[in-house]
Image 1 (cartoon, one colour):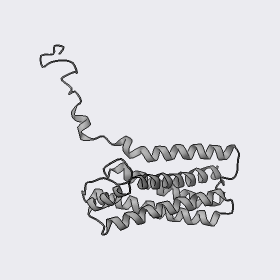
Image 2 (cartoon, rainbow, N blue to C red):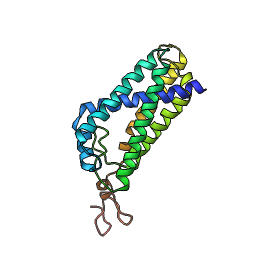
Image 3 (tube, one colour):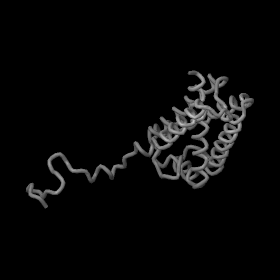
Image 4 (tube, helix red, strand yellow):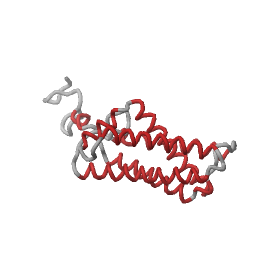
Length: 196
């Protein structure tokens, strides 16, 4: 059981960093614009480049570590770096929300505001990195072609997809609620209650 938990956690973190890097590279200016709009950190363009490069480096090194059974030391380094980076993201998101600085999170191609769900995703991923780190000696390597690897890959791909889309799925713009019928009126009726 520890091997399954460690593996799903590690693969989920690495796959999510890979997806994040791909999303950032598809719209490289989105993160820099979001950081500039938050007005918290200096040099938003440089910091965005460092964050994207860091995610890409961690994802690439994580893939290499998972492909080679002898890559345990590299995997530990990747998990420590991932936990630190994701904890920084969660802390930054909390600070932006606490100071009321509105704007996009800059975390994907889709323009999403910095919501609690963005912070929750970063926190969950940081937690998964710590779980994988604590159990890193039992992680299933990707070169092992058996049923346990298939379960790990399916579970981690599912968790990656769910975590990645969580903020977008839970976001409900204020304009979406404006078109809903009120309690006293139903759709298709006029003010007098007659069909329109």
